[in-house]
Amino acid sequence: MATTGQPKRQGQQQQQQQQQNKTTEKRKPVFVKVDQLKPGTKGHTLVAKVLSSNMVLQKGRAASRNLRQTRIAECLVGDETGTVLFTARNEQVDLMKPDDTVILRNAKIDMFKGSMRLAVDKWGRIEVTDPANFVVKEDNNLSLVEYELVSVLENDEIAET
Image (cartoon, rainbow, N blue to C red; front, side):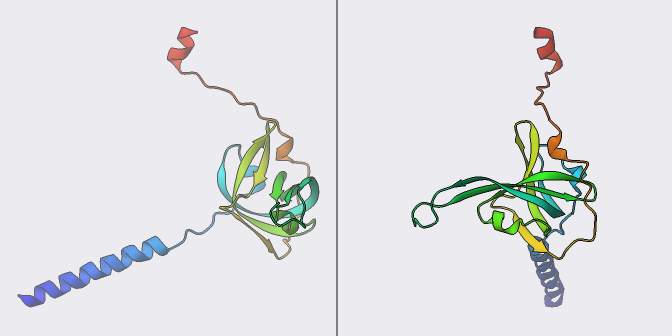
């Protein structure tokens, strides 16, 4: 009788081990192309070349300890499908140098004055990587497309108006 309980216990231990392995496994990143980006989406991972970087805001003094310096740069990044403006903040500005290739992890799309801007917040990461071997399609700038927020009314609401 004692022998039947032992395999059962081993089976439970194996199940627990498998469950632990499932929770610690990381998802493989799904790389997207620039032309697949849509307004209001997040969690994008993409490889892009930095075409240009323009400082748009620089506040604060670097010499002062209790006043942090705020820097914001608009960087045009792209791949073989198109380009989009990337908003680099603070330390990110130093990573986004023209002609560098970067991997943007967990990037999101912010809307600014009706157009898309790519951004990486504290939950994402920017990595400078080896130069990519693609030619950037510069005539498809997604940030030049203007979007308009449209409220969709339900059938009942339309009848009331």
